[in-house]
Every structure is written in C-alpha cells, then in structure tokens.
Image (tube, rainbow, N blue to C red; front, side):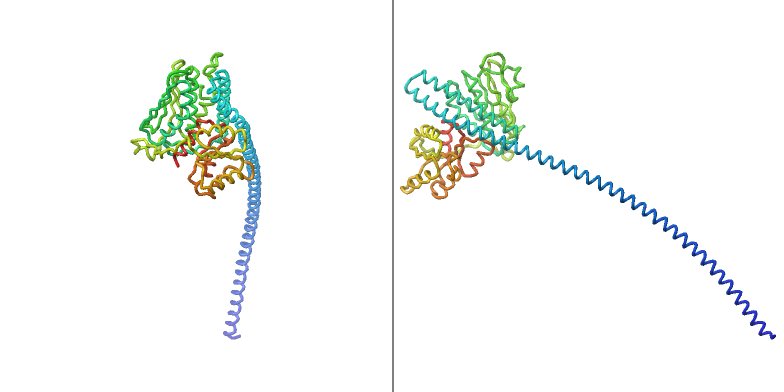
Length: 471
C-alpha cells in the first residue's frame, strides 16, 4: 500500500469523523430548538388561556355594566315618563283651573254687570226724583255689587299669581302719569266721602314696571285708603332715591289704621284685622297680599306703617329704568293732544247681551249719539250704510264674545280692513273674561284699550277720554 493510499484513507476517515461530529452537533442543536419551541408553545398556550380568561372576565364585566346601564336607563326613562305624565297632569289641571276661573269670571261678571249698571242708573234717577229711601236702597245694591266685583277680581288674580299664571312685562314707563291717571278713577269715590285727595309728584325717572300690574297694585292701596278713611285726607307723593335707584310712591291716609300687633300678618293672603266683633276696618284680606305679589313680580316691594286711630302709610317701591337713571333730572312730561268734546260723539256699541247693551247705552248716551248692534253682520250693515253717506263713528265699544261666525277681534279687523277711516278711530274691547294675557292679546290684535265687566262708568269715561285724546 502506497503512502498516497494511506493518506487518502486517513483523509476519508477524518472526513467521516468530522461529518459524524457535525451531524451529532446538529442533532443536539435541533433538539434544543425543538425543546425551546415546545416551551414557547406551552407559554403561548398558557398566555392564550389567560387572554381567553381575561376576555371572558371583561365580557362578563361589560355585560354586567351594560345590564346596569340598561336598568338605569329604563329607570330614568320610566321616571321621565312619570315626570312627563305628572307635568301633563299639572298642565291640564292648570288649564282646567284657568278655564274654570275664566268661566266663573264670565258667568259672574255678566249678571254682576247688569246689577251694577242698573243700580247705578237707578241711583241717578232716584237722586233726581229726590226719593231718599229708594235712593239709599239703590246705593246699597251698587255698593254690594262693587264689593262683590272687587272680591271676584282679587280672588281670580291671587289664584293666577299663586299658580304662576300671571305674567308681567316690566318696561320703562312714566310712573307719575300712571299714578295721576289712577287717581282720576278714585276722585269721584273720594269726593263722595268728602275726602281730600292730594297728589304731589316728585322729579322721578321712568320706572321699570308693567303698567297694568302697577296700576292694579296702586288701585288696591288707594281703594283701601278711601274705604277705611271716613274723614280727613289721602296724600299721594312720588320720590326718587339716587343711591338705591328706587322710585317710591307713598300713600298716606287719616283712616282707622291697623293694630301694630297685626302688621306682620297683614301681607299674608286671607288675613284681615279681626280684633273684636266690630265690622269696622275689616276686609277680605286679599288686596294687599295681591299688591305685594304684583310688585315683587316687577322686582319692587311694598312697605306698611300704621297706627290704630291715626292712619296708615303704604309705600310702593319700583326700580328706576337703568337706561335713564342718569339723565332723568326732570320727569317726563305727558304730551296730550287737544281733547275731543265728550258730549257730541258718535258712539257705536256691539253687545249681544240685551241687558248689557241697555246698560252701556244708558251709560254713554250723555256723551253723544249712540248706535248699538247685537252681532257682526248687523254691525257691518250699519257701518256700510253710514260710510255710504260719508259718516263715521268717533269711538267703538266692542264686546269680544259675539255670536258666530264673528268675535270682537275679527269684527274690528274686518272694519279697519274695509274702511281706512276707522284706522284712526279708537276701538275699546269689553269682555266678561279677565284672565292671564287677555289685555296683551287684545292690544296685539289691534284694540286700543280694554275694559272688563262689570263696567265702571267713571273708568269707561276715563278710557274713552284718554283714547280720544290720543287720536
């Protein structure tokens, strides 16, 4: 065997040994990788199991929370439905109350208007005939009617205030003018009792007030002062405090006064000074609480000071209009046109109630020529005939509740649409309904003023005079 052959054999053996070693190393390495892979697979399997368990826990928690949210939502929905039902019931109850008061107001005011109207006419006739006994009877009927009217008005108004059905819209207005106009309504009543009614207007700016609400509050106080003052005077004055920006309206009388012990309770509804058995000085206990509530709705207030047998001082406070506080060195002056004569007017009345029509005709006939109609068709016929002769009425008094298809608003609008001359003629609405928003609704519809039944003759004259002055 040659050396080359031996070398080749050794080389082959060496290669075989090397290959075997490499193969063994490869197998060991592969085994380790397989073991590592198995370990990783086991770890992945355990991790996947944990993830599945976590997902199941999350799903369970989500489902539990969703159920809780669903139950909470259903509870809130049920509660919301219950609240809506309760609100609907409250709204229905409020509507029924408003409707009931409106109907009661109408049902009472219509016959009461007849009673007061005819009693007033009868009183005037009996005074001319100088029949004192019958005059006293008629006067007693008239006073009883007036008391019933005031009680009815106060009951309805205070019910509306307590049910949040009385809406006031304070705007800048000349309080001195409103006070002066309100005093005019009570001059006759004061003169009858030989009371001196004095008004001393101060230099005040415009106040933020609802004219109707403020006039109502002031009327209540004035009416009380005249009612409970048998002799002496009633002084009304206005003043302005620059520091507090408050306008004060002070009403001081020399009446019977109020027991100081009762003053703290005086402004509670249905409370009246009932010390002893005497009827002197007693009232329904509704007026002043209503006046206080009306003023508070305008961000004002009411203050009372009184002493039994000496008299009472009531002060109404109203906020000044911020826009004019600094430039109101002088009170706004009322600019009036020359008043038309109140004895030569052509007056047109629309009233379907025969008794009310007769009362209104008797009340206004001293002011001129009165023509009356009972429905819309008759009204349009009369106006058309007059217009054909180029004649037009000076003032229109329209009942709102007329036989179908007309009502007072539709009739007024139709007349002003057909005859442009009536666009400069005052239309006054008169109605037995006296509920929230009536005056605003009628004024927005086009009427110039509003008077509720039973109609007071002096108030009617005052409204007619004011409206004629404007035109």
